[in-house]
Image 1 (cartoon, rainbow, N blue to C red):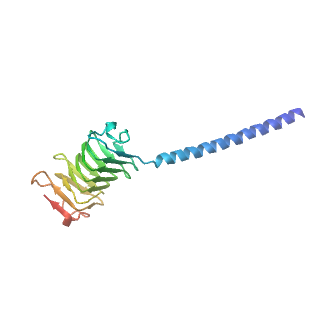
Image 2: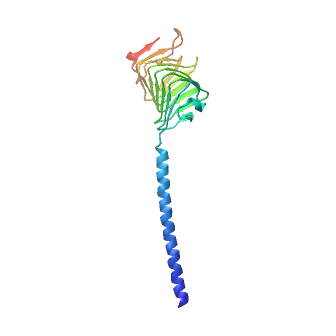
Image 3: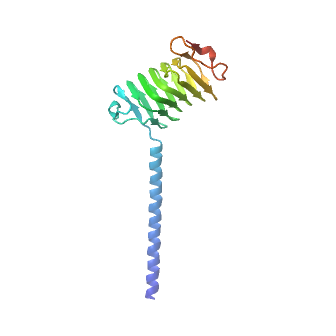
Length: 201
């Protein structure tokens, strides 16, 4: 009889412990999901506060360097003369805005939005997103501006001597140059290019 009572009490205790553990696990899972969602949808804006190199965190308002692979939701705003050594990626959903001078020693790869109202000097450009250029973009001599399923607009100037345009593109309202008086090799007959709004230097 005593053994039966002990066994029943023991079983109830184990059952209660299991119920409590299951509740703790569910609470932990919910908290983890909330934390993950908050991290996943966080947005960071990096704004330059001084001339200098991209990787010097003292040149940025938050004291934190922006990533060179700018993730979706983040924005980098350049108000100064900023130089980057390497590749700069603007992911889909990310924004890069240049209001002064931006130099990129290797490729500027755009899947998101690049707004240029200043002077940009990338080694080369690969655009799969949107380039709103009302300033000037100058590539290194001999390098290629690749526009693959991308949009280029906003009334600026692009100095590039080689072009590769393909896919579902939209190109309009740009002046296309290659140095002084050279042929930029801008392709003809490409669907999606508004040639009536393109000026060749």
